[in-house]
Image 1 (cartoon, rainbow, N blue to C red):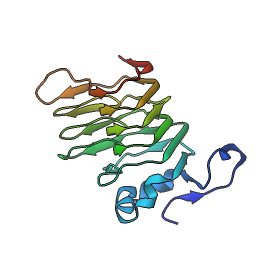
Image 2 (cartoon, rainbow, N blue to C red):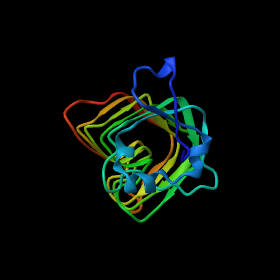
Image 3 (spheres, one colour):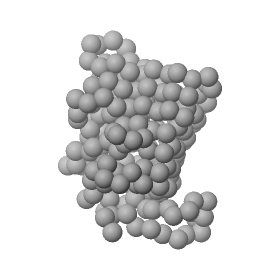
Length: 188
């Protein structure tokens, strides 16, 4: 079953064909599966428990095609997320056009070239809702706590507590290209 478990639950009725992400998913290279079969990129996923990524070097999902589905963290967190690459578009998702909600990245380090953020290297018509990151983020240009490049996307009830740095030492806050203003978004 490749670590994704289809479920039918009253708590997830708002979605069709929801798959659960649990500790078994840590044994699977989702990014490689998505490269082979892009239908993985538009699914609906729910996290059912806190995920500890210790000892796993994570590969961002959506390098060749954007994630257009929904990831609902259901109030859970990811700990010890480590992404180390010299590629552009670095984060939990390389390119995000879908929705990530109710999820926290409690700890980790995310390092990339350009367009680096905890949840997405780049967003376009995406939504980050009720999310936070305490991970340390670093890269070249377009580096942000939640997303490196934030295009025409929605950001609500999110915050960042981790450090965000550019390799050249300049202050980093990502790049935002959009008309709607973020709502209740904080960086400390």
